[in-house]
Length: 119
Image (tube, rainbow, N blue to C red):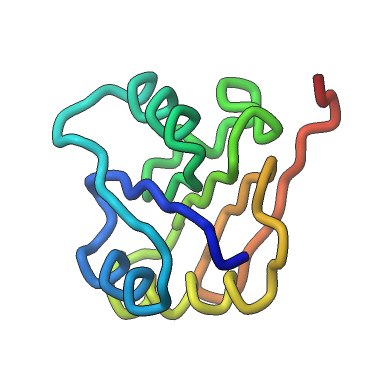
């Protein structure tokens, strides 16, 4: 789990990047203003776990989890940075294999979705 790379959508608070880097993970933001399809390409190219608050990425038909190194969609309202960091910390403690899965993370926990039709 140590060599994980994270790609942060522009809607993810800076405190999340700081949290990840403090724990020794690689974390970088997507370029500002890029489209979803470009975010997807970048995540695949960088072999990174995508962190976002954009619920579009929770659509496993458009974004099949098995095609990614992991997608984490935060559904925390209001999206206070400390709540997102706490939820991510819990996810990283509980999950050993993020690859090929979609995680919808809420304040109380998370739900995991896996593709059923792996190529």
